[in-house]
Length: 196
Image 1 (cartoon, one colour):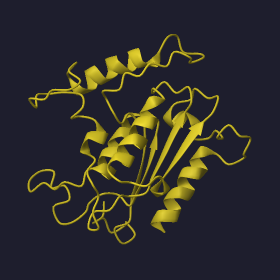
Image 2 (image 1 turned 180 degrees about the vertical axis):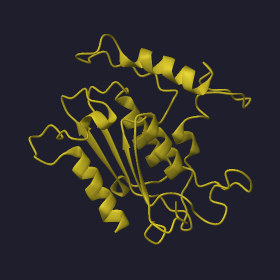
Image 3 (image 1 turned 60 degrees about the horizontal axis):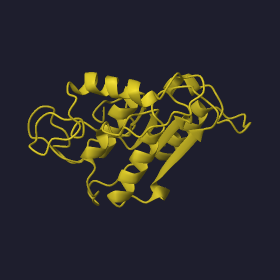
Image 4 (image 1 turned 45 degrees about the vertical axis):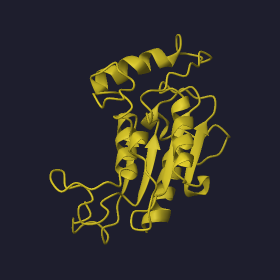
């Protein structure tokens, strides 16, 4: 994308919803380089300049219970566990021997200390309070970012109160405070502030 002539001097951002938000987080977090396919960050830093994540999964191992969801039967963690096992192809959460496991497949497992050459990119995390993606995923990413030294002033977090909408379902909705600004407009304004 950076090399595309339609891209403004290599400036691009990513918006992802649900599993797309997880993939967007991967693209922002992974500062490692590969010398063969997919040639990631081989010549510097291929990461997007800004990323917005809507209802993403960031720590595939989290099983924190939260059974107070209205409109959703039971705890969403049970459905989350099944999806993660299918997505990662394993029911093993951690494997100290390096075999296939859910932790190593998690976006937050790719977090390292950012450098001057490869700095943290501005991110916007949005989640509805009663999202079908367990709400604790939002806490997971915040905790892990703090753990690698990212100050909370370097990213934004929005919780849409009293909503069970998921990812792009809340794009045209408000934040639950009565504001006329839609969440989609918030994301576009965020990207404009970092890409223009």
